[in-house]
Length: 197
Image (cartoon, rainbow, N blue to C red; front, top):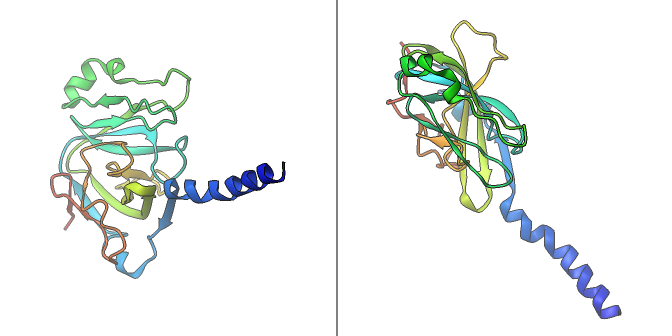
């Protein structure tokens, strides 16, 4: 009996160590000195895009957020059951306007709904407001960048493209989206965002 309780204690102490490699850890990098060239800067949206009510990468799987993704891109559901089903976004606003109900997606359990909130035309100005380094356990880390549309309240923050490791969608908007720890800010792919004059 004593040996069995000793093994049980050993397993209970070992379990957190085994699970720690799968932890989702996030670091707010917004105030770091090397982010001064990115945070507060304005960018021009290069392609027509959609604002989507979707899960964020900076919190638990159930956290909600607005995600900006290009037309023709994919948005995946990050859920605990691993379904990861994709919502293919319409290529053009005309395609969406002709049949918006075709792009509504509600999870069978009634949570984690993904839906297009609005169209965001190319040429829209976006200001970067926050940068998170999101660690995805053994997969690595990626940058999650947030911004606001020009002339919108600061509390209307949205994620600018998906995080590379989250399985949240494609395409990913950041070059070297998982190049964390080198004291350099993320760099947007100019196919999606370019610096505003």
